[in-house]
Length: 365
Image 1: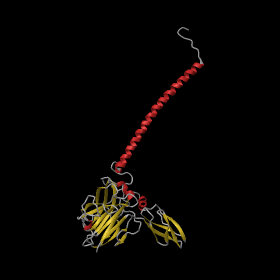
Image 2: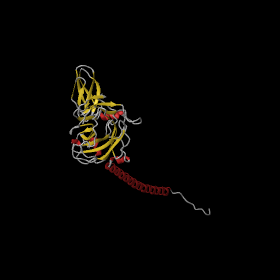
Image 3: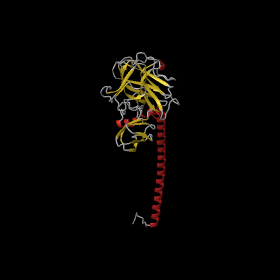
Image 4: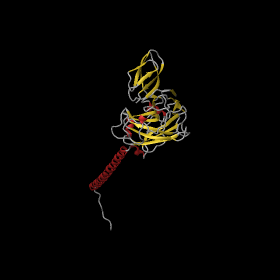
């Protein structure tokens, strides 16, 4: 037929053509794969570099990772909201020096004729703030003349492991305070050896009125502080102090200093009371709102240093595990019987009758 060409079908030629097309397709796929692989490798390298950069940035200044606000557990103070009172006492009359009352806070004093009581107080800042209790000091006998070596203060001790993140960093302490006596008070930061101290003044402006105070400082780097299971940092809220402990404010000093000469005598009258709550120490130069943690978490954190609990004993020996591992093998005081084989994880209780007992285990700094 005109205009048409007769074509015959050859199966071998068709197969060859098909093989050639398949080979071309494979080659194209491989080329695409190589390009894709190169792109993926470049992408992976980019992600890795970004991650490394982020890690370096986070390590160089931990608090910057949250845009100037720490993520997670911001507050290094355990029981800063003063909710945990495992020792079960809500009033302590004329406490001895270095006595724990609520969990993690201790009162220290060396006085002449002055005395005071400690109380769990329901007086807290106005409605809207997340505090149930405050720590109250009630002066019961005036310390009319303060000798050079005397003092009275609330103290908090931060474990070295928890303090490590503050090494060489700027940090801010914030707290709520109320006092009958107005004037200048001091808060002191110092190391375990008592040879490096930093003092900040704050002013009680209005009598018997809750006021929020802040103190910002930069911690030293190096071997001045401890960063393991020992005491990393002392913080003391001074109520009265003698001249042996006076220094200048807002500078690191080499010595055992607690206040400036401007510190008032908060125990010069039996009318005086002093309240403290809402304590927070965090990285950065800004005091953020108080970090409210679940009570169970706060109790668990406090239980590293003290645990009060009950146990059903038998006529014999039983193993009593702690609910959380303690900082070190504690001192255990059972209400009856005797304790032994004490470790950071638990102890054996020996008792000659079956009974419900209580115990207090302490591994304070």
